[in-house]
Image (tube, rainbow, N blue to C red; front, side, top):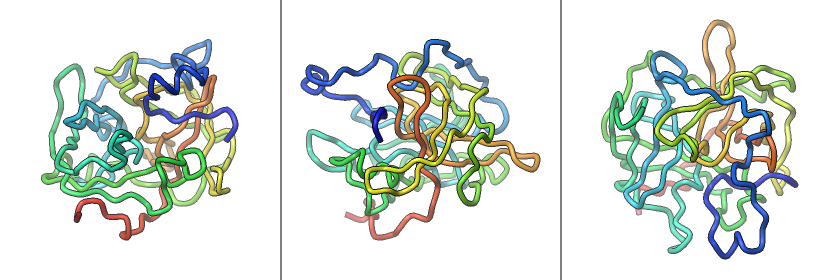
Length: 244
C-alpha cells in the first residue's frame, strides 16, 4: 500500500503533516478527456451526492442498485455513516442536468471495511446503494466481470473529479498493472489510469466479448499516475446500514 492515498478529502490538520499532491492519481501527462453521457458505459455512471455536500461517483449494476466507494458515505466528524435518506444518485449527471434521480433507501458496506483504518481495509471499501425508484433499465446497467483481471488488460476509468466536477472525465488509454493487496493482504486491482479525488466509486471498465464490464470500484490514488480499485465481490448482508 506504499504510495497510495484515499481519494476522500483530508483534514487541514492532516495536510499540515502529510505532503499530499493537489491531484493524486494524475501524472504529468494528463490523459483525461471530457465524456458525453450518451450510451454505455458512461450513461450508467452518475454522481453520488449527499445532503452534507459530499460528492463521489457511482454506477448502476441493476435498475435500482448502485455501486460506489464506502468512504464516500463516512462522516469523520461523527464517526458514523451518513443516513441513507440523505444520499442521492443522479444518473448521467452533466452540468446540472441528469437522466434520472433517486434517493437511497439503504446501503450495504462489507463488515471488513474500517474507515478509520482505510489503507489496511481498502479491499472492502465499497458500498451497494439501494434506490427508491429505478434510474435506468436493464439495458442501461453495467455487468460485473467474474474473477480478477490479468495484468496488461486494457481498461478505462472515468468519474466526477474535483477539477472537473460538473462533467465526467476519463482516461481511455490505461491498463491493469497487476494485483496488489491492502494492509491485510486482500486483493486489489492496480491500474495506471489518470484519476483523482471525486473519482472514488467510479467503475474500472473493460471491453470484453462485445460489451462493457466492470472490474472494480475506484478507491485509492497513487502519488503520481494511477491507483487501485476494489474487485467486485459479494457483499455480506451483516453490514446493512439502512435498518438502523
